Length: 401
Image (tube, rainbow, N blue to C red; front, top):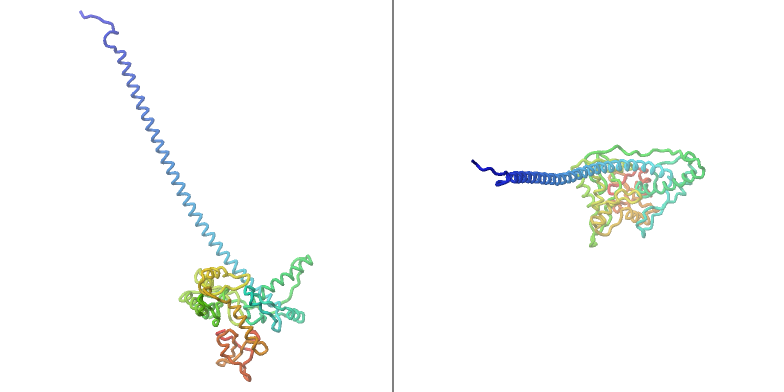
């Protein structure tokens, strides 16, 4: 018979079972912890990648926004430039009307006396006018005032100076009257002006033929580039080494290179009775006068409304073209030549009128024809004090003037 023993003796199955359960439980807990750590690691990795993707997205959005803003700014700037050009042309057209009115307001049947500015101060370019004879004439003639008076040797080139001074005087007179009466604009005195203003022609487009550094012919119309003045044909120009050079011919060649074989568009702003039209001309979007001034080929017009002074300053700073040496503004040079010729001319009238190829022609003191022209007595030749006087007598300006 087999012997019997207690369960607690020998193999301790309770301890074995308990230990096995604990081991398995610990193993299961370890696997759970490992899974949790792996999940946390993946979450952390996903977060880092999300942050990087977010940064990349922000950078891309910023770049897109920057490009969009730049495009908007460029378009806005182009609109501002176009609007400014439109406003400028409108103001310039209005200025032509005001200038013509004011110049006509102070017109006189006789040639008004004027004194040229002192050349010791070349920065002062406004002539000093004596308006007392003109005012006396206005009192005698009442409302009969004619337009486009004779205001000096350079005709309509002086009109701008006269108009600016006249405009200031007119503003003072009108403003004083308004302040004195307190009734506003309606109380200001008005003058019934008779006569006709030379209306500028329509816009011109076509091939251009160069006549001078600032003149060309487009569609049969002689154009003077507005806002710039080319050096005169006989005007001396000096290089940095003191040697003379043909600055006038250089300006003409520069203009010819610009317009050769291209379509030129001109917007006329004024016209004088000599058949010359003042206009702003462009090739595409490029302003011809601006290009010439920036290259140092022409001078910017003087005065308070100098459009191309900035372009001239660029050439002056670079010391190119006219600014590579000593130079004199054509207005100053012509004024000096005029005064010198006036001192030796009969009765102080230096414009020569003569017959050339059966044509009544007059030459200005600075023209190439002036020294060759002879005013002979007993013929149609004569001396003139002004261009208006010469044109009224049937004479036409020489091509070199």
